[in-house]
Structure formats: structure tokens, C-alpha cells
Image (cartoon, rainbow, N blue to C red; front, side):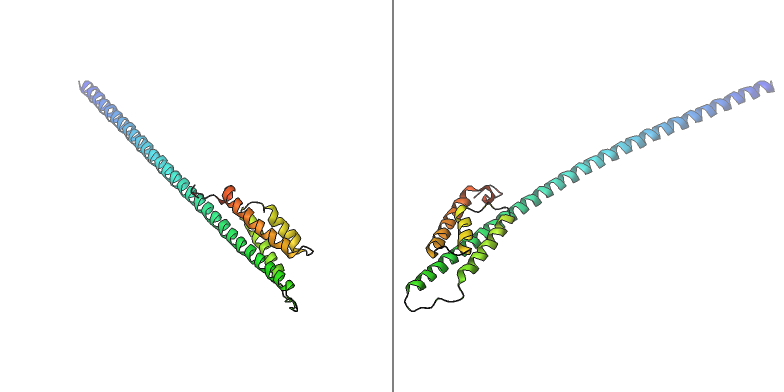
Length: 185
């Protein structure tokens, strides 16, 4: 009988051990499921955060690109205004030289400003081209080619400069590089 009681107690102990083992396994499984669920939630949160960061970065880059385009547009327009001012100075210098040539007994000034202004125009044109401006119009190319190298009449220099001003005004209307990045003119 003691043997039977010992067997029953051993069986009960085995059942209790199996019950606790199953409970431990079930708790471990539930814990792993909770951890997996928490990990999945964390990964979803990280993915949302990555999407939000990526979207914010793309918006910032688009804003920076627009700001750079606006800055370059403004610099091109500023350079065109400088070029137009210099062309006006070239016209004035050519006309002054013409007037001096027609006055009797007036010695021309040895420091003729026209070659200096033409060099400044060439520099301004180089800057405009570097900023993404259009190719120079033909009258401007003629002015720089013929006006700087001498042998061209002052009347032709003035005419080239006036025609260059007109061509630049046409370019401001027609060339895409002078259109506002925001779409308005």
C-alpha cells in the first residue's frame, strides 16, 4: 500500500511538474508573442519615422533647389542689368568720341573709356554665361569682336551697342533662363 501511495504521489508530482512545465512553456510562448508584437510595432513606428524623415528631407531638398534656382535667376537678371548699363556707357563713350572728333582744335583724351567699357562688357558677359545665361546675341558678339580690335568706326560701335541692347531685351522675353522659377514673370 505504501508503494501505491508512493506511486500516486509520484504520479501527482509528475502531473504537477508537467502542468508547471506547460504553464512555463505557454507563458514563454505568450512572452515571445508579446515581444514579437512589440518588435513589429516598433518596426512599424521606425518605418513611419523613416517615411516622415524621408518626406521632410525631400521637401527640404525641393525648397533648397527652388531657392537656388531663384538665386541663380536673380543673379542672371542682375548681371543682365549690369550688362545693359555697360552697353549704355559704351554708347555714351562712342558718342563723346564722335563729338570730339567733329570739334576743331580739340585734342582727344588719351584715356579713351570705350576700350575699358568694352572689356567690362566682355567680363559681364562671361559672368552671365557662367550663371547659365543665353549665348550672346549677334550684335553683342559683333560689338566685342569689332569694337575691341579697332578699325571699326565709332558709329558702328554705337550701332552695335544699341542693337545689342535691343537683342538683350528680346532675350529677356524669350529665353527660359530669364523666366521666374515660381512661374510668374
